[in-house]
Image (tube, protein in one colour):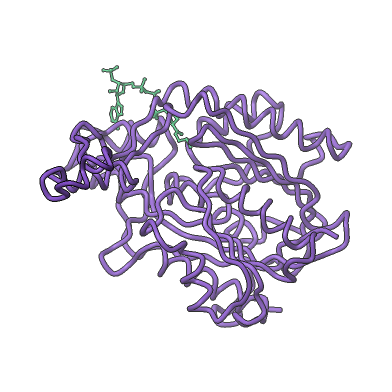
Length: 359
Ligand SMILES: CC(C)(COP(=O)(O)OP(=O)(O)OC[C@H]1O[C@@H](n2cnc3c(N)ncnc32)[C@H](O)[C@@H]1OP(=O)(O)O)[C@@H](O)C(=O)NCCC(=O)NCCS
């Protein structure tokens, strides 16, 4: 027993922030950003939007496209590096809002999050623990970047996308998933904001407030003022890691299925930087046309980037029945992952409400 993607949906913020607008805020230019990253604009969540609202929009679209209701879903896995809150998991709220059943959990695997979530859901389905699952990648990265840091803030954007998974026979759907992590690279992409250490620092003079407790629980009164809450990154090192990892992951995936990378019809990579993808394509000897890119319009949306690109590829008919599709991700952790899928008609994103082909 395996699992297949039955339908996809997306939820993207209304507001678009173009590089030209960033020129007015930062010492940067549209040309620099476009040439070094491929990004022209990104979506920014407004005050009335968050991961939950964007994820719900994505899940409802995926359900509609599959002709299903929330009650048909028995598992929800949400990948996010920027959850709206610490507790409870966003997946639980999504489950409640949709009227779904079964287990619900969030996970954080940096920009590889969607692939980790896909592997978790595939495992649950293969074990018979659920019949259908929603796998969501969602981020509001613009809320955790330092808008004074031109080297990082220009890269990221917000958005959510969801994949509806159902069980299928072995050899169909998701053929294989590979995952990895190298924790010694944990400092290369880092954001301390929102964690328990940061909370302790926010409480500032807690030692006084907590009185006797501060002695019994030393952490309560600790000084954390030195914590930098926003994303910081060693861009060049991440760039090299990303290129090497994408190539190695595709090779590993294909070798495990006795296939050649040349047999892959479409690669949907994590959209971090178009130059990373160009370098990886060249190193693998594959034409760039075989890589689906939409980074120009969304920037790096971390856990949401692969499903957002896959949803768009399906909706724009870049995929045909029987196509071999490789999803490749890498990110904070350091983490990486890949999935090889056999595309089936019906994952085409047709939505009767949008005038699509429907099912
Ligand atoms: C971030 C990244 C675009 C920077 O590109 P780069 O070619 O490595 O550039 P550098 O960091 O070496 O910086 C070169 C110069 O550009 C400057 N610069 C950085 N950001 C800039 C910006 N937005 N506008 C203008 N200049 C900028 C730097 O200050 C530096 O100036 P200096 O030479 O005077 O010191 C690139 O390293 C990258 O994409 N790395 C991968 C990051 C990533 O994908 N992370 C997420 C992974 S999930």
